[in-house]
Length: 409
Ligand SMILES: Cc1cc2nc3c(=O)[nH]c(=O)nc-3n(C[C@H](O)[C@H](O)[C@H](O)COP(=O)(O)OP(=O)(O)OC[C@H]3O[C@@H](n4cnc5c(N)ncnc54)[C@H](O)[C@@H]3O)c2cc1C
Image (cartoon, rainbow, N blue to C red; front, side, top):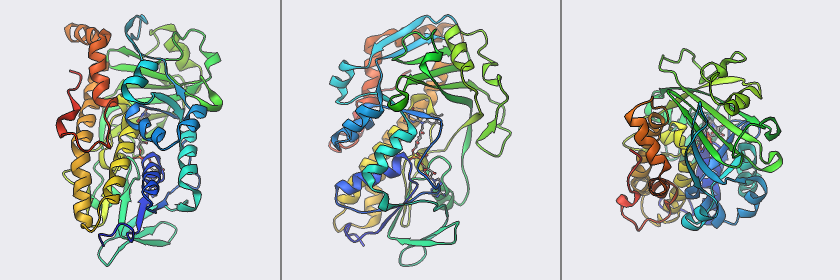
């Protein structure tokens, strides 16, 4: 069973992590089959920011030119006061960033990212319309059962099925998601609708008491258009069964009506369909059971305040592929333990830092906010912050666990 060349690998989920894992495995000469529930690989109406800790791998794998065409390399990281628009901190993330971290910080539409990834994987390895409903891991191999009545066998099942993971629920025996106390709206606005927006080529946080707006430009066909993500603290229990709920028009402006005109302009420029509940999952002691292993959001769904969910999923994919490729004659269980050992500390730290970042962005007036602003303005503090997140090289197993430095506050 320990021979990686004979191992049949089923990846549940053809999202960012699952596709990246398939590419990483392919580079080691290892095949896998991806089972994806949707009938088309797409995520409509949303974009994603990828930082050097993930982008470095895509560039190493020769995908740089595809990103040149479809992604937008952001110029600065800016934090502003949400109401006055005053710049609190402004730091270049273009050429110096590339030099320091060996790759770039980009905004890209998710559909374009999926396109780059599945083109590289090869459509023949992706099975669409395969919604996993159960896994039987009691026999000589794992049997995956899909909602259409079909089934498949595998020696190793990777749960890359995202924040609403069925694989995780099957592994635990219950669904353990937790509402994080935030709700959000997201949208993409054509740049010509934003004449008031300062620094349109930057990724920017506009901060206020209990709320923030994050936005950044995307590339490809909609080059320069702005993806926004509007978050507000909403601690009442989320009253819906679904993770999203239809919003009434204008609801997104409720807490932002007296914010800077560029913010109000952005929020008013496109209809906003749904309100999203921000949910996360507890870090588990183990991400594997029997022949099943979790990765990405299925292993550590995270609040998105650091923009690191997809980036962490990509890091997981690179490490998991390396562990599978290196397993030689060792057991599946040893391979799984090694993967978890290499990823647990890093993922835990980013998950916790994402929660702290939410608190940091939403501080009310006072001493803590003043201290935060001083740190955001400091080039040294920002560099320290980016070093441990964006400067991290997940493929460098030689460094000790402590290689990650400290967090924000
Ligand atoms: C509003 C918002 C903004 C974000 N912004 C950023 C950002 O800027 N940067 C960043 O790094 N992260 C960001 N994230 C987080 C990021 O989207 C996720 O962390 C990332 O997509 C996780 O990748 P994944 O491969 O684990 O899961 P996903 O990319 O979600 O992929 C899961 C796949 O599994 C499939 N699937 C699910 N269930 C089944 C099933 N039963 N059977 C078969 N297939 C199934 C799904 O259809 C999907 O294709 C954001 C998240 C949100 C909500």
